[in-house]
Length: 345
Image (cartoon, rainbow, N blue to C red):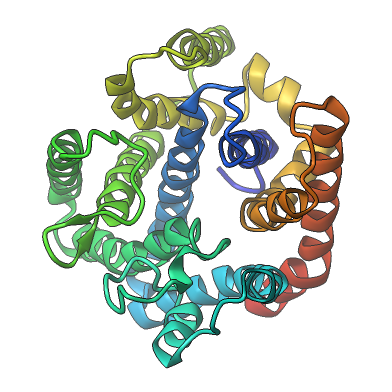
């Protein structure tokens, strides 16, 4: 798995754009695509679990929990705060809302939207803070989950697989019995008094990604190319057959992270027809803009809503995508890449 996997970059970018397009239609009450676009978030989380597990495994005895937490925050914060500064002031001005209080500011700085405190504030619902519950869950769940993985790996290696399998089963039971019947489309609802369902969703996806990486790392021989090609195509066809229709069975949303994990596992061998088709320079571009695009797209939806743009028109959709991709590229070039260079020093 050495080096950048451009095929995974391609699908990460595609999933980010899928979320942006889905929100564009649904937030404008114009249902043009199936709700299954929300499962793109699970692809991000499973992929993160897979990739971060690879990084932690390479460190082994050198892994430090404090250093890991610091690096994760520094990785996520620059793009996040850039999108907050771009989006929040116009929203506050246009809607004539009060600014953040001190607790809101603390939650922004620590990316703690998923912490169920200060519930009377309107601030967590302002985009991109609203969708940043995913980033918040990814950060804080990872800060606890990956040190657990490292601890088990160094001292109790035989327990790694069963522990994370139990976490998957535990999270799946809770998500499947969520009383609002939101399935995987859960945001700020609480399980009990203090545990956000977004955290449970993240534990579910991260754990699946971790197990997928463990299986990948134990694969001594690369599967034959014909098998990889066939399996990659089967994953894509299965996705379209199960999820790309308006009346898809919502219970099948719980299968998506497992399907994603298998697909990521297959692409990680850097072989197969789907890998070869998607591992291009354009894939690198899509990977670069994926994180900024995910966080900045609410800003452009907000702007188009102010001007009452007719979302039924194709040219409005194209304008939205142009503005989204251009701004995401600029944020990547001016904020994300320079910060990544500093982080790697």
